[in-house]
Length: 316
Ligand code: SF4
Image 1 (cartoon, rainbow, N blue to C red):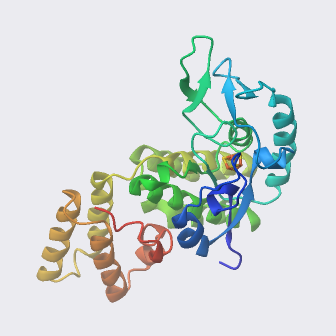
Image 2 (image 1 turned 90 degrees about the horizontal axis):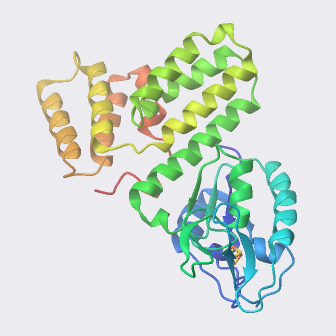
């Protein structure tokens, strides 16, 4: 890839001292490890909408569906200021061609879910969405988003980063000449990746592409993108991955030696029962793909959806 993947991120997660108390919330995995593969576009809604550092802390209050952003002690309402800035900011971010966004969890401005909303009952409901995060997600509903708290879970982390890289490949497709041929080639490379997330979407995308010739290209691409991103959001469980691995093994069944077949089956089973990580059978299969020079499998994104250095498939 010529240019780095662009991801929006809450500024404080990169160590910028923009929090209400003058501090930061540096996340070293995001800043140092993932940061080697992406270009971050830092966004601090509270500072960028004109508030100082340090500042009085804020919280959400009122109707959890459309809360107000209010300072906790002096009750200054910053809702309008934040919404006016947010609608300008999303227009600007739309031009940055982002492939994802990582939000700071629990923030009344940046939190993407389960943010506290203070209601008349006095008991906060944990059902809010940060004010900027809401505007952002409503503007870019198909873009992969997560928060740094959830990204500590290896399954969520693997899923999110896989979606970010998939979105980048989708953007590359959009940048080229659009047509059924380009979409079929994209679909062919992603078949096993989609299957590892959802058989239903695998079938629906297959049908869509098969009937694509009769559809306007814009409509075809838009429907494909919706189904594709919806599929990848579903977790690729050990059962689903083992199914794909068996499917892949089918391509070699006449060429693998008895020992090779036995070793591969054992490794798939160890993975399916969660005794080894996914990287073990995938590495073995990668070896056979090269050894037996299987062209369809060689181009499958499933075998290398993102950089191996991130070690996303190494968790149990
Ligand atoms: S959580 Fe959001 S608003 Fe708060 S300091 Fe971080 S980036 Fe700024």
